[in-house]
Length: 492
Ligand code: BGP
Image (tube, rainbow, N blue to C red; front, side, top):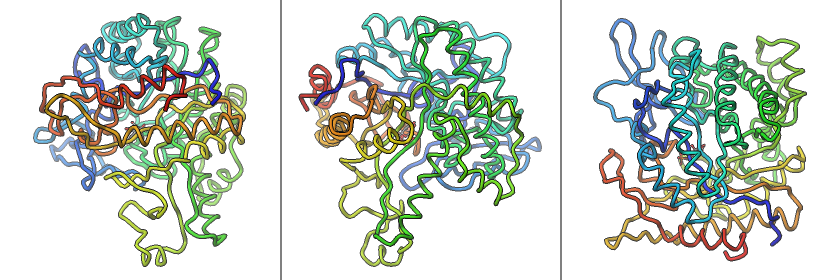
């Protein structure tokens, strides 16, 4: 395998799932701080109150419509459990955790800045000093071990105050707020951080408008406007980043996966094509630099009108993302022949099941070829450097009495994923910058809020209700990944 010398290995995280200290050091609340826990069968909920004192909780389901009741203001309520408040306490364990990353040989550590830790209301004139200092300590610790940070500016962490005052990203005020925030952190961390991502899984705007855009009303009109505002903000930040430090590189971050037709009926292929367009719209604009016709036609059909300016489109064309990063865990199957699929036992609550693949307990198929397919799709379309910034296996790991975790299933999964990535480089010549496995250290699941859906190389003693010592235990995969990195992917 011929991964180039500059290929970077590492692991990923997100502040809202990992950091904890949700109300420490002057931090304001963000979108995720008001999310309750869920499970494989129960959705997480956004809790809220109204000015008349009425309270409630609205389920948040990936891919389903979302809207809070009229007048509902997202807030933290007694009687609910909020798993992200504690995360796995990177806030107090960062030294130990970064040391573990160094021991595995990480070149890169992907983390997000908690926007409301820097600007508690999202658009405050002056930054919160304690917030800036917190990340200074982290970046200094990384530098000790020569680990480069890859920083996501917003990993679903829209400040709650912006959601309450403006209804989230549907308002153009958020463009200015985000550029202001980016300006502060890019100047402050100049020299310490060179790789930036703007918005985690930008296409979450469509799949989970509350997570992706802080939208309390996820109507199509609001999602379209929200997406537009994200694109404009991204281009402004690319421009700004290059002005602040010519060495800065700003990437897009897209949720992408392979989608297969269940049958060879062309109608199934059309379904796949349209589902891909729904994802690729976001990279066509943010990385490709222009709105694709299929989306403009859709807006025309659906009567969507954007609050836009001619200048927006000039910016989008002139300042696309420098590289395209993406998350990719599994693949999906679509069909127009649902009854046939059902009769063959290939339908589950999560959709059509791929009979050629195994799945984890959450119904995510483990696809050994998905990365080669995804990388080729994206490379052929944009010819821009790519970066796999999320890929991993969620599993209920078991801590043995001797403090070991035998996660051979994870090793098996990752071995296939890395091989698939190497095939894309070796066989197809894709330009790949690196790989940050999700997640470096165990953290709270984004989709379910559970602790039992673990991804890390290092086990953290914490359960679904926040009990546990938070003590860290390297898993078997920790030692395996160390070997993989040391051999630049040869020793799998
Ligand atoms: C991505 C998110 C991550 C992460 C991952 C795994 O969508 O960017 O934040 O959590 O999915 O998902 P989950 O935690 O739901 O298993």
